[in-house]
Image 1 (cartoon, helix red, strand yellow):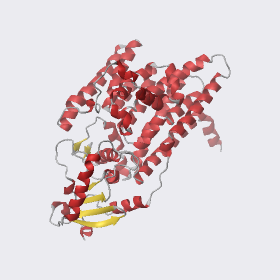
Image 2 (tube, rainbow, N blue to C red):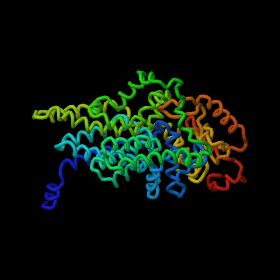
Image 3 (cartoon, rainbow, N blue to C red):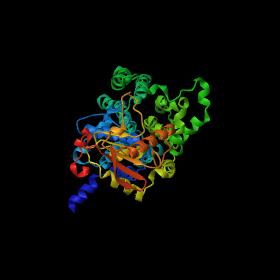
Image 4 (cartoon, rainbow, N blue to C red):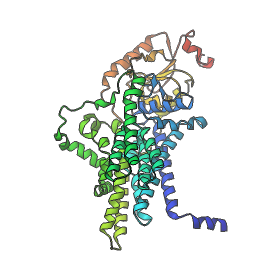
Length: 487
C-alpha cells in the first residue's frame, strides 16, 4: 500500500486525465471504425480498401502496392500510412490498423495540452483545450469515416507548433517532415510557416528549412513521383472542375462560408478568431472550398481540408489566452472560460452525433461474410465496391466496376472468384457515389456474362449475393486454388 500511495503522490491528476482522454478516444473511435467495417458501413469503401491493401502489402514487402483502382503504386505522397503496416506482422485483423491510426491522431491531445500549458497558467483550461481537440466534430467524423494520411498530419503539425514555440529546431523539423509525408497537400502551409517565421524575425534556419522542405515535397511529388507512378503529370491540380471566374467574387460565395463556419469555427472554434494568425497559415488548405465546387457536394473529398484543424486548434489556444487576459483581475474569469469550453465540447459531441452511431450486424452482413469465408486468401477476387474492404488483405483484388486510370487493362473477368450483388452495384450503405451511375450498365453486363458463361460456376448464394469461381481447371488461376475449393 505504501508503494501505491507513493505512486499516487508522484503522478499528477492532469496527466492521468490526459492519458484517460487519449485512451478513451482511441478505443471508442477505433471500435467504431471496426464496427463500420464489419457491417459494411464504411463511408467510401473503395478508398478504404485501396489504402488498406497498400498497408497490408507493405507488411508483406510490397510498399504502396495496390490493384483495386489500378495496378501499381499509390499515387499520393502519403507514405506515413505505411507506418501502420507492422500491425499486420502480429495480427491479420484490420482493427489494429484502425487502433494505431486513431492513436496517432489522438496523440494530438498531448501536443495541444503542452502548447496550452506553455502559455496558460493552471491545469484545467489546458485540459479543456485538449478536450476540444478530442471531440472536434470534423476530425471525429473523418477519423471514423475514412483511413487517410491527411488526418495523421494533424498531430504532426500540432507537435511542430509546440516545438516551434519552444524554439527547438531539430524536433520541430522531425514533426514537420512527418506532416509532409502524410500528404503532399500539407506542403503549402509548411511553406507559409517559413514566411510566418520570417515575420517573427526568427533566425534564417527557421525560415529557410520549412520553405525548402515544402517546395521540395511539392516538386518531387508533381514532377518525379507521380509521373513515375502514373506515367502522366500530377493530376490533382484540376480541382474537380475549376470555376471560370476566379476573381474576388468567389469570396462572396455564401455556401463556402457556411461550410467553413460549420466545420471549423462553430461552438468553441469561434475563439480562434481572437488569434487568427496561425489559422491564416491554413489558407491553402481551406481555399479549395471557394474554387472546388465538388468539394461542398460530397464528403468523400473532405479529407483534403482536415490538416487545417491543427491550425484552427492552435489559434484556439492563442484565442483562449487572449480571452483570459480580458478577464484579468477577475477571480471568476477562468471559471467562466472553463464553463464556456465545457459547453462547447458538449455541443461538439452532439454535432458529430451520427459519427458515434454503433451499427448492428444484419443478416445480410453475416451472409456476405459467410461467402467471403469461402474464398482462399491467396485467390484473385473481384467484387463491388461495398465489400472490397473485407477483401483488401490480399495481394490482388479488383473492383467490378472501376476503370483503371493508368491505361492498363484491369479485367475483373480474369479473377479466380467473383462476388456480386444481383440487384445493384453498391458503393456504400451510407454514401451516394458522385458521377458513377454511368457504370451501372457495365456492372449488369458483367452479371449477364458470368451467368451465361460455362467458365464460371456458382458456389454460393446468400440473400441477394452470389459467389462464383472460375470453372476451368486447367487455367493458371485454378492452379492456385486449393483442391477442396475446386471440389
